[in-house]
Length: 110
Length: 122
Image (cartoon, rainbow over all chains, first blue to last red; front, side, top):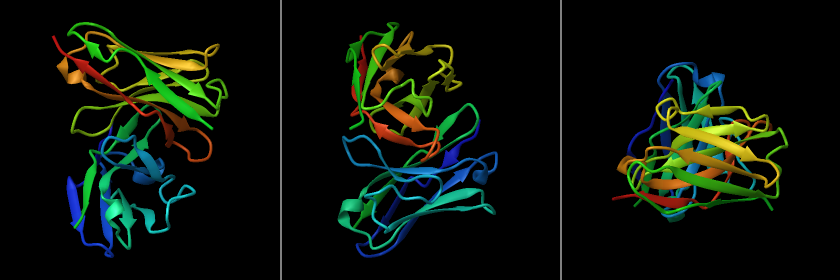
């Protein structure tokens, strides 16, 4: 089984851009789609990026996703940060028999 | 509108068996286009996938939990269930049920239940 490693926390000021990474420990990042979820305290996660870079309807285009084959990682970028973006963010991927979540990244918008 | 709702006891003693049910409304668990899964989150910690079931009854479990977990489905009630045996305090968590897409939003958990807190304590 593989693991997905995220930074524990990131912080940035309102209006700025932040990028959260998600590195796959084994297997090829591009071989299975990566999703990103936002979770606010006491709430269920909601999906903000699916299939590496697609946005569900209703998610602002300030949210974008990408993968980097050279570092075997995925990234979530949030531009024009707002205080309401402060939350925990989780990446998720899978293989034929397993689903894996990253450990989560706490985003603080100062 | 698709909704998932977890139900089950909120308090268990060590060594007991956790049993939760997820009722699905607005979609059929028999549709063949989705997996149906369980994810948990211990207090203050991250998300952990427990396992998933497909419409054929095929199940997939996290390897470290496999010996204690059974996920089953009741298509007549349009619900699926989780049984986790021999619980300990480390099984204390919010348990979520969720739909995982096979087509469109491939691989993603797109709809989640609100979650139910399960505490294991003597």
